[in-house]
Length: 378
Ligand SMILES: Nc1ncnc2c1ncn2[C@@H]1O[C@H](COP(=O)(O)OP(=O)(O)OP(=O)(O)O)[C@@H](O)[C@H]1O
Ligand SMILES: [Mg+2]
View 1 (cartoon, helix red, strand yellow):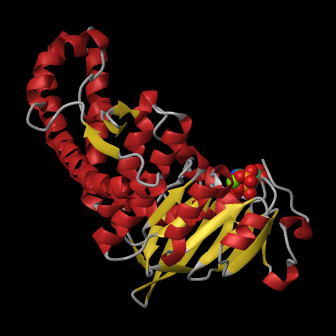
View 2 (tube, helix red, strand yellow; view 1 turned 60 degrees about the vertical axis):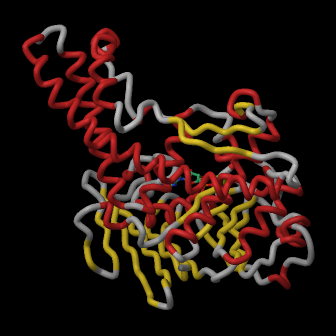
View 3 (cartoon, protein in one colour; view 1 turned 180 degrees about the vertical axis):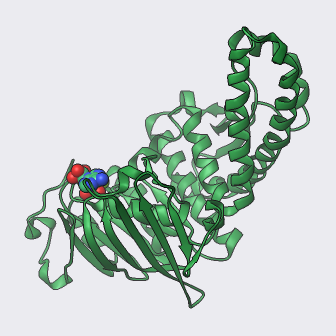
């Protein structure tokens, strides 16, 4: 699968954009705040129906406008695919694939598979468990659209159960309804746990291999699923924990407290790993994600690299670049430095300036980014 074109209308700082992309490596470069990430965000929107930044839909619409359009043209096994997203203030967004409006957002998942990689992802091992759950969910939603349904229902039930726990003090007669919520929690939660366990065991194998490659075989990384509770014990734990849930007025057990564990030589990398170990583990996880998508779908995802190359040292950059050889990649960076020009086989390069994108032929750039008047850093 690869993206051929992206059209934007009144999206973020783009009044109008018609971008044609190469099947291989595309580089978007330009100063800060010019609109590079906005382009990756629009692509992510076409894959997952929302912004990777967690932004509200209406904030994606250009200031002072009422609606925005995103149109993405891709090719899957030689067959063209068109995804349209229509954002309108005060209304739900409209999504269509090949001109056919979708009833549910989850029907979009799987049409276009992206792997998004930003500098924040390098902290996924170091940061709190919610980041790691987000990683699991983002990938699982794309691989198994039915997971989205279970996760959304599970999340809704947690919220409603928490409301009830807060209301019970004043309305003790509602106590019986807690059983109903508990059974819903177990029903949807068990599916979430099962998929996360399955996914983790699949990706763990690949992560181990990838990490051994990056560390030159010196370290071996073990990734495992750390569920708050297993499917089998969920109902029982809810019963046992009920007095504490009532005291805390919150649901204290369930997959919304899950985590992913990373170990090197039996040591918990999340807590005790060095910064370098944590970053290498995070990179291995991201690279494994690409590999797993290829294995599961028989197709390559589109890799979106948001300003991530400059965050990696030469060795780690090398591993990342080796991995992207057979994957359509869209890279953003503030400037075309010597490293990028020497190590990246760039098929198309674009200068992004104030919501305008200009393709720059490689002959125009005699050397480094300075020639195009660009500065590095943020
Ligand atoms: N809804 C909107 N309407 C108009 N402009 C917007 C909107 N939302 C964001 N912007 C503008 O988009 C720009 C930021 O774009 P983006 O995040 O893509 O920058 P970038 O090129 O990736 O920069 P950096 O190198 O700092 O990451 C800012 O100038 C911001 O004001
Ligand atoms: Mg950016």
